[in-house]
Image (cartoon, rainbow over all chains, first blue to last red):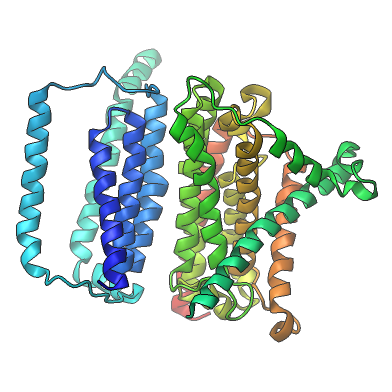
Length: 173
Length: 318
């Protein structure tokens, strides 16, 4: 095993263990913190493979903004210290979730495993290459995704403010 | 890179991490004492109260390390480390002299931003795990503030990266010219304001507002763990000041820069750190709604405008 193999295996184990704890823990804030561990593991794997920009943006956006937002929402609502029994689900749903997760993992593995030949190869992806692909080949899907997110944002705002706008109109009339 | 070189670089980064924040802390004691006519920090040890920082250190080491009974023990104990270590990573990538940085990576600009955003998690962990309502409100305010001010910081830095055509700090310093001082001025202003807010320093210290929240997320911390949070704050000032000096003030550019370039970088960084301290003394604390208003109605549009200006400049070849 080369140093690259070891580094990749270590970060992959970190990502998988973090992910498992994130979905199995009963402590709701711990789940968010395990998600940080899983994301750092994924970022480390990407870094080992040479995709530096993607790895750093993953940390910046997902750990720095999305998880902070999740923690904010948790603290704003109810995030008790200790196990959260109020949101416990029955055994059937747990089994169903596990089956669904295994099926997705199996599907991914059946597609990806034939491509792997057992060695870890590092191919340095420069920022220019990523930019060329993103704003050249994939520019339309990228813009469509942005549009979708924008629509979701506007929709969310409309749902959140719908009631108060009508209330405001009633007061005005 | 040999093993010896790796060890030497790591030790140098660690030394800088242990010395520079203490220098900034000492400077803050003295600058605040002069500006506010405080007698306390000027007393210990005789000349200019030089021993005050040492006395503080001894005091922190002596204090008992307490974890509240209702607290989430693991998260509570881990929080100071999560707050502190990312700044060490960030500091290690900042170049001070042509070719002199503890670690040189192609995407060091992004690495510094990503590391500082991870460090912010420490405050949130501390606020939630303390099992204290003041801590929780402090953590909540910190989270709201971090989400708002992350965007202007990233946009302002992106503008400089666009102007220099690189994501490497060293590459950006090489591309720097005095014309940037004017061209990138709005972005520089946005970054300075947003960086102070990211560090939760006055006047953006709503999360630790001592008159209403005791000490915000750090209320339950004592001894060395509390000291680690303070160290993280000063390390944050060092990282943000050096980043400002490197990106907007040209780093090692200056007279005799071949020999004393590192001195220029450090000097510029300390001038910025002085401004950060000065701002703390000069302005009253902003209210929560004023704080959010500044971020979304002023800093984000200004940073976007700067990005457009930079884009025009790059295309027109200024």
